[in-house]
Image (tube, rainbow, N blue to C red; front, side, top):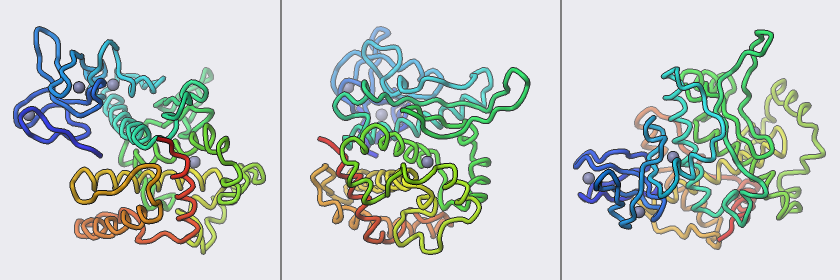
Length: 332
Ligand SMILES: [Zn+2]
Ligand SMILES: [Zn+2]
Ligand SMILES: [Zn+2]
Ligand SMILES: [Zn+2]
């Protein structure tokens, strides 16, 4: 993720709220789009970067958001959320905050890369929104589970996913190498990109690489996957074991991996470690292989600290082609 600079010269990170050196208010300015420091001047804030008078997004009060906006109550990133949990429970506020941080990271990345919904007028024709909900109880007192998933532009995340103990237990039960909030967001937005864009712009390429989703009954595929697991040779053509379940899941898992790769590439550029061409016209395979070289190095740091590897060392050719398909969906 790109970083910024405080007026005192200190670094501003993606989720910084206050400068640790000079105590200036920090955040993302809606006018210059950069991470900046802000100077208080007669109850108003001025962006030290672009000089525009702005005010904090109202969700800063809850520690949820560090955006600073002009003429709006809440920022454009927060406006993507349509349902939030009951904030009378302080635990919910903390979990909501973790979800919003992951969501903002996701949306900024989609916007930087030129992926849906930040293409043409896609947010009008195929709006994307998020709801962060707990399990509920229906009128008869029966517990109703909130299922994490995507449906017609609405991404629902069960608030329990923001609880690290729950997430780790589920991760081990389902045999997943990684289960993170940003990973959930990247996977679910993959379903959104599938629904809102991919099938409209290049259905032939989609069918050739991922298969025809309409030819595989989803419920049956899911049952088969949970009964029998993935085929032993899943890594020959898929980015994860889960991706073997259905073309929709294959596409979503590939989007997830593509966004992981591009996030690492963006950070490497920002840290001065690389000078990757990240534009839609970049040589896709070269870029992916260069990023994997960084991943191999970071995997070693992770092993040093007893953490899991970041990405596989190499992707097989069929997976590279699927990643290239996702890359081709981007627009300037
Ligand atoms: Zn500072
Ligand atoms: Zn600004
Ligand atoms: Zn906000
Ligand atoms: Zn999915």
